[in-house]
Image 1 (cartoon, helix red, strand yellow):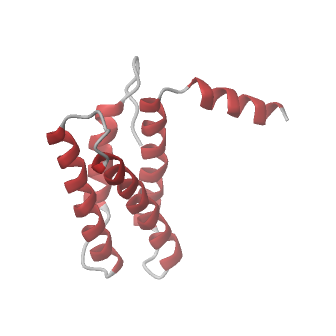
Image 2: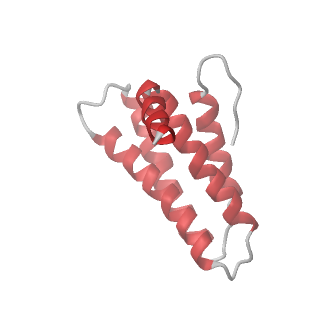
Length: 122
């Protein structure tokens, strides 16, 4: 009961930027783990790739909304990265590419989202 209350309070205290950072960290850790499992562990690999692809899809959808307050060039860049992530994820699933590029992209985004007063990494 107390743990649940603490989790809810912690979530409410997060800024949107901190929440995005935390989510990117979780997804990136899943990608890192998936990159280390045996290629025959298809479920772990595809689950991580799918989670990452869904994250980027949500970001692209948000950036496509005309009411989004980010500047147009940044919105276009995020949409472009999302499209690349989708294509690269498919190539990873087919065994044509590895996870490193996706992990590097997420880490770069996380560097820009680092919460005030901290240097964190996935």
